[in-house]
Length: 131
Length: 419
Figure 1 (cartoon, rainbow over the protein chains, first blue to last red):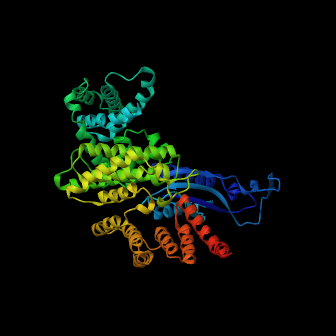
Figure 2 (figure 1 turned 180 degrees about the horizontal axis):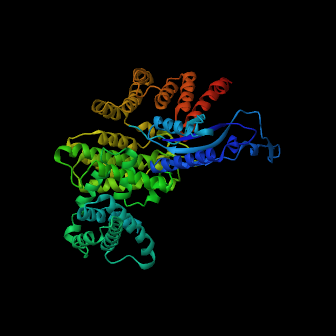
Figure 3 (figure 1 turned 45 degrees about the horizontal axis):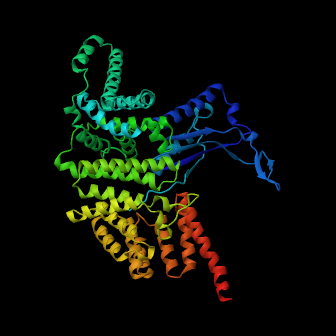
């Protein structure tokens, strides 16, 4: 079963908070993410994973009356934003939760775990036809 | 040519494993040989002895890997001597390749060993026995190649650490182990048939591969009725493939399918297999499900379906296995024979079964039976509840469309009828 893990990060001033971190803390965080992805691949569970550009660059798009894009944003008032996501392929939901918890504990300033909220959603597919 | 390669893959792997004992290394070497063949044969032509060619290339690869491994351990001189002594350079005599039939079975027993998770067993079976490349298996399951490669190598790690031998299971184990093999083949087939992810082409290929492997097992063990039953079940199900989805991938339920689009040749073959298996007396779940599929496939119109027979089969199946999905299908058959109220009463008892309570199929079946009973208000409610719970997009769309049509008819249709 596939799950999307959505990593929500607390919002700074429209930018990643981590731009203000010390170089050591920054490196520890990035190294953690590389290791995390590699472990997922080694476990045969990695499908996809991406970090997103900071919300300072986010654009909200709607179709205008003529179908042309009408853009809006960014919206500095939201408290959290989607910083990145993974799609994983695991054999049970508990495994997805465990992996989400692991990502949540990514190191922040001073190596302290960030405990970011990770939203876990099952990706729709077709079922195995039970008999 | 891909067909030829897939046919030869387990034969070459079997000989190599038997000669060298190291299944994991042999499997890697055969995979490399298959890739080399796929690259070279189209231009150079298929060699006169393709099996010998693959064997030679795989053996060389294996030797190369062993050499570099030995070099790494800095024991080059002594071990290289051992290697040379152990490595006959001539291709294996045909007598040895003659064992290929058994090898395919032994490999299947290994790759579908109960110590492996279903996902690992499926991946390894497709590569080692099916002769698919890692890239092909990855594409079929929509994961990156690196992920699939790791899954396969972990599966081989489990085989090594569990010391699963390259040998036929003992008579005592055989039935259970054959059951595991059939289950893996069944899962591969279902993945290709029921799953909506990925390109239709990759899916069809997966089902075809499951059928091909089931045919191979049936050829090797022609008198096992459950093997025959599984092959029949696959053929009788696959026969409906073209009719089961609409233009845009939407699900078309059995009773609304255009039966002219069912594959008559597959149905005839499947029915013949069921008729061969059932009288043997060792009735099992695959045969029974195949028999149900045959009854559906043989009905010229949905209303001609022999539900009384289907009900009888589900009653046997239900006594045989304590599976709530079987109970659910049994309830449908009861409803078709004795009316929706009788079916709904059975569903009520399933609510207490925590394995299926809250499963979308229970709600979906309940919704269908309520609709048949004329209670469209509750039918809409359960169609929507089922749509909330399914993780299948086509299924959800089907259920929501059902709910919307019923609700609309409730609101407008009756008024229109009255005028």
